[in-house]
Image (cartoon, rainbow, N blue to C red; front, side):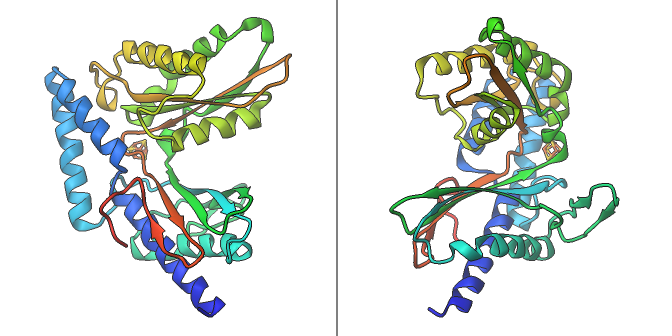
Length: 299
Ligand code: SF4
């Protein structure tokens, strides 16, 4: 295929994929919401879960976003060193964001900082955010697509703890944030906790934690234990769906960690809301694709 045609094809597919992510929640989130709904005993909690379910049915039927806040688009790319459109990918994703904004449509969420005007395109200086990783010996590409809404971005926070404070301080840091800001993010939440050396490594880890499946476990036994303890602790707050009380506050807690400087414990929190709109699309070099988090869908 001619390069220009390949660029148009990938732009078209990504634009449609962004649209799909906006109105159809990923499989893991759908099934977790169903599970949480069945567990709840309070009348208000049951009503809210029922409303969420109806909202999703209508969003799917009408092909309209699950929530009015379609966020700022964020892409996390793992690109094979031999993927034919590697050099064009940033431009393609910006164009696909604009196209989907017009066609899906998506709310205009890109305001130029300090100049205070909305570009009305969902593209602006540095938006959408695109984060790269290069994969050796590969000619395909994996693209996580995430809609970072205002409410669910609001609890985001990062700090660097003194090493003597220990891992217990991570628990306090996360719980302090959940008891003060958790409510703003439309529970039940997917809580991403990142651990590393400094604020930016911890922050990136905490966002990558939101790309991981609900109900997945950290491979490290101690980190997996921390995930469980945090999940139990945040559930005990009793936020319930939309913060109106209930048995469960979270869909889950995912921890992503990297090695750290011996004198620091960098930690960050990021939250995904009940309408956790993230998806994964994987292309081969011929632009054949699959969407492992949205099984059964075609673009
Ligand atoms: S937190 Fe999520 S569900 Fe709530 S308004 Fe923001 S994007 Fe919508």
